[in-house]
Image 1 (spheres, rainbow, N blue to C red):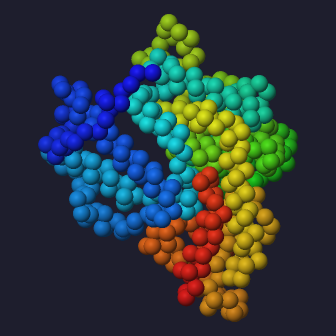
Image 2 (tube, helix red, strand yellow):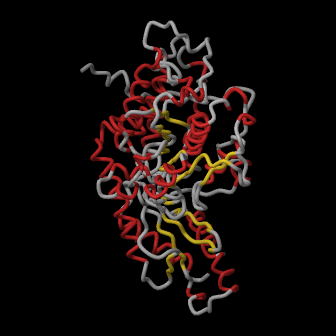
Image 3 (cartoon, rainbow, N blue to C red):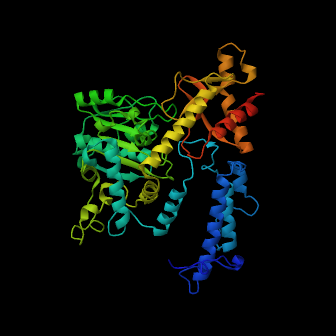
Length: 487
């Protein structure tokens, strides 16, 4: 092993007189480049260390106008003249300082949270490689990693031999849109050349609690929101955004098979449970789906973004989306051009989302992801058991949650004796937003809230960060009660 310790030792250097033009590929730019990057690594490692320090705030909240007006030494305005590397390093520090530590063990605001060190390393390498996923010739290793990982995911779903197709896309909404596009192409392929006039009026079916991206996909692809005439596509949600509920996939699959409908399972949030022998039964029947959305950047803790669309029928993505651009996808290359995956994507430029996920899988193994999933569900069960009969709390729905989503109202002492009615509803509706605002001002924790149907605002607590412990749950409850006691 070669020793580069002296070469990569941080040295005292005056960055106030250095600019981007002084870095590589500039002549004599190697040393300034190394020293600049070492400073950046120092900023990043300090941030990582503080992220796992519970005495560090989750966020240092400022209103938009404050950040736009500029903080001390930090200005968002773009300049015509280059700024020094010293200022660039200040900007790096302050960008992290005024952001939200989504990897903090007391950040519960989103379905995507946590800071995985292996995933972080993978993201650094990905940005350094700076390539595109559209052809094997410019991303050979990444293309093969993607194909092997997607095959493994299809095997876990339960499709024979892991056969089928798939891509990593810019998020669950786009993965869901792919599923609608492919379903339309499967039943009405002439739409690709003749447009929607070549198909009858089509309709999609999805539950009221499904992710809004299913409806958005229908709107983008010309289905509209009103009732159509010809049933085409049914979406079953495996882990709804708010309640974490799982649709009965087998029952829905029976109907789809009877009427020859495309069955899609949106497992963006719940797909990760397939990694757990204890919890994968909640997705029973997923192997009967025609397509599946699965977001490793949610329940599996992979850094954003990392979303897969998986399709049971091999070649249909290519048939649906290919445009045979000769300047990219030449058929007479010296290698097997079936590895040029770009023509089956709706994008041309496609970010490398696979490496961080592949690297995490190598580092943890399937068993490591299983332990992660089981641990998060165990922590959420602890929260549910802690508050289900606790004074000052009401559960939004009866029974133990299926996922890590724990939905509840905190009832301040002033409302506990108040009879149910419009006045109580109006006051209770304002409780969660007020507590959330105080949480953010204090910077101690973050948890989401929302109304749902006829239900007034309630807290939705989710756990996807493997760093969360029972003591963090205890802290959250104490903080809600401290901030909400006098409301």
